[in-house]
Length: 188
Image (cartoon, rainbow, N blue to C red; front, side, top):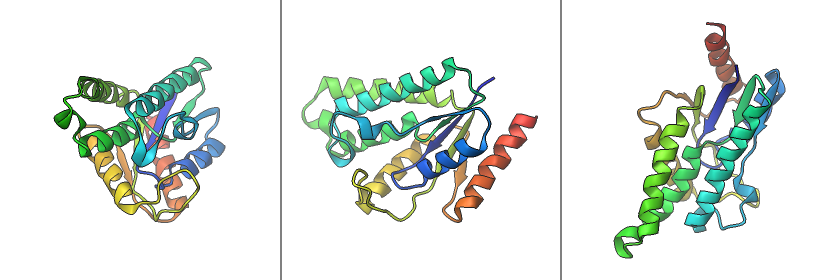
């Protein structure tokens, strides 16, 4: 049986670093890397409907393909909730469908949330990582207000789902906490 681990949180919360470490530690693990850097459309504050749909559908496709090889673990360094948060922040903030009555945007948001809510149930373990201080890497946004908005949307979206909160702190403490939770659950 494949165990799927989802890491969720705003940009610069440590998801990639944690995913890399878990990939080293866990036997027979497949890592689903961040998709956004490959997106042919604008990302971050200037994202588009097409961009977020591309990212979300590519992520789902990649997670489905990972299951084909039946690894013991699939480690997802982002979840569809992350993708939805960027979409929601962009279009809710700009009130696209209220001002333009853009049916495509309204349908897209409803469709995306339906997919997100159902897809979140496919993660056996969901870990929410609180944001860390921003570090520029040439791709991610370094706007603290933007990070806070994305974090708030992700945190709100998690309500009603089972997840574990990983607070900022020593990196090895986060790794240890994840391993404890996975081991306890997989040994039951």
